[in-house]
Length: 368
Ligand code: SIN
Image 1 (spheres, rainbow, N blue to C red):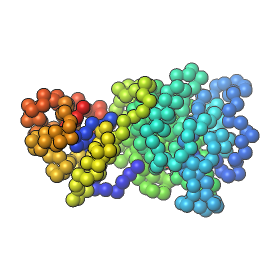
Image 2 (image 1 turned 180 degrees about the vertical axis):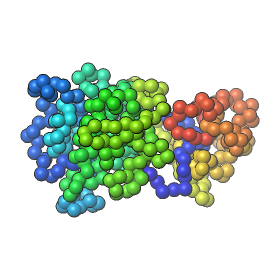
Image 3 (image 1 turned 135 degrees about the vertical axis):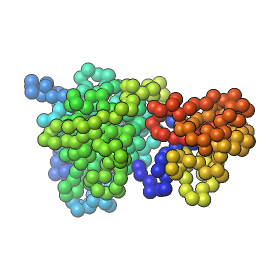
Image 4 (image 1 turned 30 degrees about the vertical axis):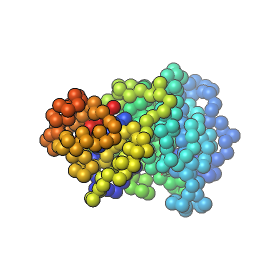
């Protein structure tokens, strides 16, 4: 999800604790079961790939073949989606499973948890070599990042969507899905973290962003670049992310039934703390402040150098400050640490301690 704002970095902040679809219409006959077990030795040599369907434009339908905007997302069932691309059977032993069926702007924590847990269950099975998730493109990057942190397996997980609905002329869903299955069944993708593949390009789930509302080449990794691309039925990788992914991260959702409510406050000129206060009042367990530059927070929100104001605010809210988070060591972020520590005994988590956190972020006073 990309917002056109002046904010260039997402930042943890403000008294906060926070981590904390294709089927061409012509091919919608589901009699061609996608759930068939490998029948011969050729099939037995193909990788076993489970396609988890969640909705999005890739499962969307429009009124006509030229409807590329005013369509409805999340209409085609998983079986029809999979059966709509017969070429998949050459890429792997595929079966589809409908995990949920929504447009991705409506993803909730419950959906993320359910998806991550299902992927983990499946990847524990010896007869599953890789996973493909079909997903709406609007929040592919959020879901892929979440999965990159919480899937506990090195087997390939590939998230795929499409920019044109299944009924559109030149729908991009079928080729995207085909490529995704090839990647998910490939040895080359093992250990590379959760991957996103559209438009023949393979990007890291933790890095990719949707850069354009409607074009098919929208998924990009600014500055770092894509990991590789698909050509002639094969993934070609050029680089890999050096950041911890999947089984190597400290995040594990196995025992969780829910995730805490974490809200986002966006910075803007003339920012005030109305949204922040409202989120706090509504019981947010953490707030992410998306600030300008290197994640700065306006003085009128919280001034990290003004320990007194910081302490006063915590007192007003009934918070005990136990940790101070600084994610880089500029004086305008760390200058208030000493006084806050002296007054509260809080521990300081310095930037080095946070180098493996997903986002570079500044600071702040953490309450629990
Ligand atoms: C969605 O994100 O579910 C709708 C838009 C899309 O998939 O491109």
